[in-house]
Structure formats: structure tokens, C-alpha cells
Length: 93
Image (cartoon, rainbow, N blue to C red; front, side, top):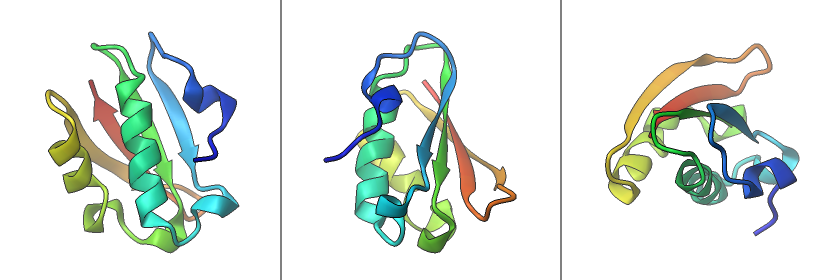
């Protein structure tokens, strides 16, 4: 799986992961995998904003439940649609 350097680091603060790059367009499975990986690398007490590609549709259709099934002790909330057409989902760890 191809990832960006910032998504490979452990984060002891709140941060955002960009999952709206060309490789994410139409690839819900990749988005779910990379979102789970981002949450796993986020320290407890922080959150990660998961920014998803607009071409994949609303995150309620494929991402929110997948995150909650895969990860214990998180709180997932849809934030808003970005000006670029993507979506922002905040995951509290």
C-alpha cells in the first residue's frame, strides 16, 4: 500500500490525513485501510481528521461503520464537505 510520509508517523497530537489524492479516487477499500492505519497511529486523547475523496461518496456509506467495527474506543463524527468536494470525518481516539 502506497502511503504518504506523514501518514506513516505516530502522532502525539491531533492531525489530518489526506485520502483524496488521485490514487484514492473511487477506491473505498483503500480509503478504509488507510483511515484505519491513520487512527492506529494517533495517540489517545487526540483526533485525526480523515479527508476523503468526493468521488467515493459520503463517508456514512462506507467509512464510519467500518472504522467503528475495526477499532475499539473511538468516537467517529462526520464534520463537513470540503470546498474541494471531499469530506472530513473526525475520529477521536
